[in-house]
Image (tube, rainbow, N blue to C red):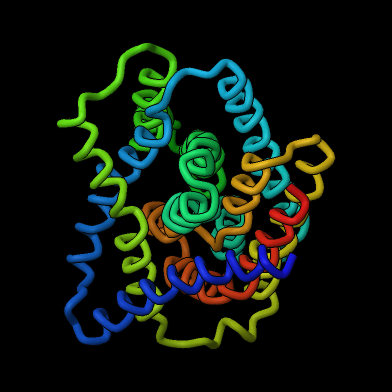
Length: 308
């Protein structure tokens, strides 16, 4: 257990040093909002799909395909648990804030924060199973997420549900996994180089958000604290218990728990802006949960490694 905690802590500290670089660059005004908007698009449309494609770029294995199906089921279960907890335990009276808190609890930073840690601790297998979590995340993000935040009940866009960088990355990756085809070195090398950017770039973006916190007054708000505790501790521990009872073990189990234990996803800010919710609260929730995850993630993930 101590060795697991030490290994996870090491990786989390490395990530937070990179976050610190982003924080310092922001304070020095080298990293601006315009720069971050560009970085987010690079990560979303180039880096993340390449990470997923690289993890799927392997020889076909029927047992691994079966495990991928189980990982998709486990990902749905984890998100469903988050939804139930968010709706049962968030008591905020202000509807705009309540929606933000519920959205933040359901949708973790399973891409920017989880993928680098899954890759560092578990290698390509961790990212392989993490991609299943991202696929489910994207599916629910553009369906349940929109229904939750949109008072006008805008029609759900099927194109956004099924045509987004995460899903496209999974589909391309599955093609190479399920067929005898593979990318030639001249194409695979650029994919790998772009995939390698998945650790430093997202961490610097998170550092930008942390640097943007102007007040910690929300830390005195019991509803804000409830959302934090649910997101960082209660929800991942519930996923831990249920997935363990489902007999899920090994790298898949740890990969799922890393995704579930990640802080509030940065898309909480994006969607709050999109549907005119309290974006300032969303930004603070993302930044503060990321800050406190340096304490919670090593404990929960080390616990998962111990029981894998």
